[in-house]
Length: 126
Image (cartoon, rainbow, N blue to C red; front, side, top):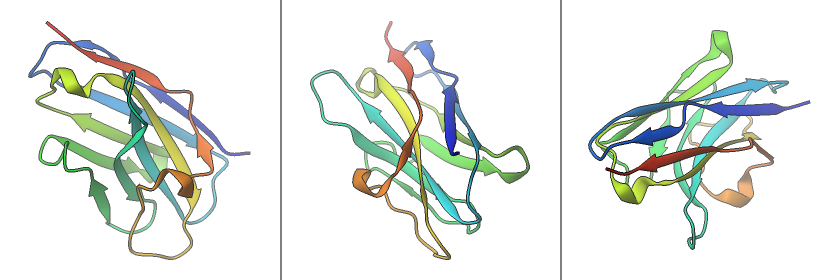
């Protein structure tokens, strides 16, 4: 059974940093992990994604150059390093997964993802 558990959220001042973790279990040989966020009054949006077996990552324009996604396959974990945080980054952040097969590109389309974590709150405020 696939399970995803996020951690690492919290309150941070503008310009600060946080690192989110996504612990994964029960996975397939080839999969993709995506990070999404959902702010109050907004639709959930894709932030970043990474493949389990190929060095491909993708980022939303709003976070390019500030966020970095990485993985540690030995630990079955994916991380989202968030730097230069802004108040508009405030949201509940979710990691999600789908079985990708052998591919060279991950997707940030929400409907592609079959499994979701419970979310972790990130608040950027002074």
